[in-house]
Length: 226
Ligand code: CA
Image (cartoon, rainbow, N blue to C red; front, side, top):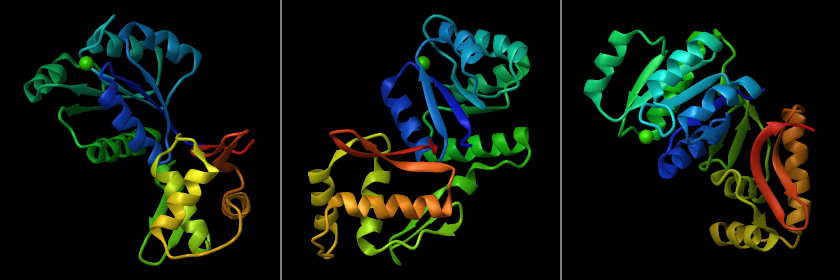
């Protein structure tokens, strides 16, 4: 099961970047933009880790953090706009598991999230769920196991995985695949997708990453197999 991350952030741009990075690293990602929605959302849905911005509409991150600490075991990573703020927050002993200062690199956030989860959840590690794509050898591994893809399947997966959640039409996929490679094939996108999904499910039967969107096309998203 992918670990669940709740992003609480009122700036769409920041939230979107974080979301994309975390999705690429195999997490299941949710987002709220108001502080006063967090406690109720957590009661209903739950998450393994909350990335909590300090300045939020509705209720500030400090109060949300205090409330969550009484309510849930979820890890909490506070995100602040000023580095000086962190000392003050530490002094308040809010019970947050880590602090990150803006501006941050999404890469850094992913590394910190993983470290916190490793620490707080002891062992169960999302890295095992990672999809790693090696362009040099056109080799894709999922959960550390080689998917054994053909060049066309590799390219297809790469295009889809580069933008998790985006729905591609068959035509868009064709264009993207054939623009980037010299591979020529007269097979339809559907038959490539079918084989790709088969290979994913051989390696990882409980996970589905390529989803067909009825009447439209395909998208990449981390989820459990239905
Ligand atoms: Ca904010």
